[in-house]
Image (tube, rainbow, N blue to C red; front, side, top):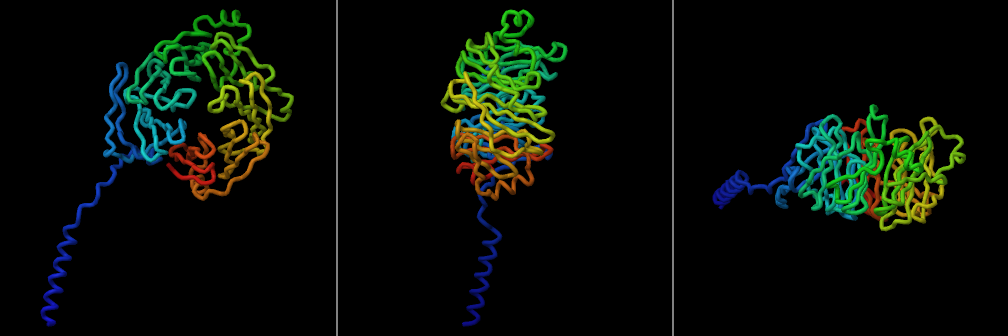
Length: 431
């Protein structure tokens, strides 16, 4: 009997050995496409990793195949939330714009980049070089910067195709905004030879053509004709916003002070709002910063503007809020500490006129009373750990009371991480 047991054991061992030598093929791994090491950063899953060759005449982007998914490492420099689940993120790699969109909270991304034949010398910023009305309608400015003419790219199909228009203005585009798919405005600033003269251009056909409204070939004539609007020549422009084809706003630092200009006729004439900022309330500030005009989602009457007071190497923010479409603005002091270091100039973000967030030293603060008081939220272990290696806050945005995105970066800007919260800032995860 023992002999038969030995024979059976030997046979069983041979079967197991043969099985070990002929394993089932493992499931196919998701391919990983690495960028150069200096651009390593966020790892995202992309459905179609190739950009579109679609300048001039429209051409289809690579066909999506949901079975072909690639993991790529890319350095993201900015983002914009478009809905609770949809957002854009982008960066520059080897002078190529890498623009991605997700519709599933960052689980997968689609490459909607323009063709690599359009080089970008600088990193695009939202509201300056990139603007999307919705997931389908978007616009990108490629400033010349010694690499050819300034051009405006436009898409009406979510980046499947891009069309190109040469921008007629000189200098660098400093701000871009669209009120709807047809009506938009671009503000450009000339170089030193042009004495920094700025010009405002309007489009009524979705960036196919542009018409100069202010500035251009004879800025002095415009100064004389529009005595209410010398604002568009001096000053350091910060942002531009339009709530309709007629009503617009520009914030800037003019002679060292935050200044607000408004138009009621689509940008033909601009008027300074003399009641917006009172320097007498800021006796101890060495300098100021002013943020963009932001109107809350779904509202053309309620919005806000952040203003920072700097003293030495510290900055403290307060907010100016409007409830009457920008006719009057009320100063609301924020009960926040002075900010220093990398994130000194990072203003809070507001979803409504009452609800807002800010991050100080990896702690998220939340307000429900327009900044009169701020509640520190429970510590998020993942956020604290991430900000040790990525201490710089690039951008914080909430789409609703639950969903928000946060982009953090290393101090040398070589690497970045995009994070998300789904519980109002209490917990965070890397997308």
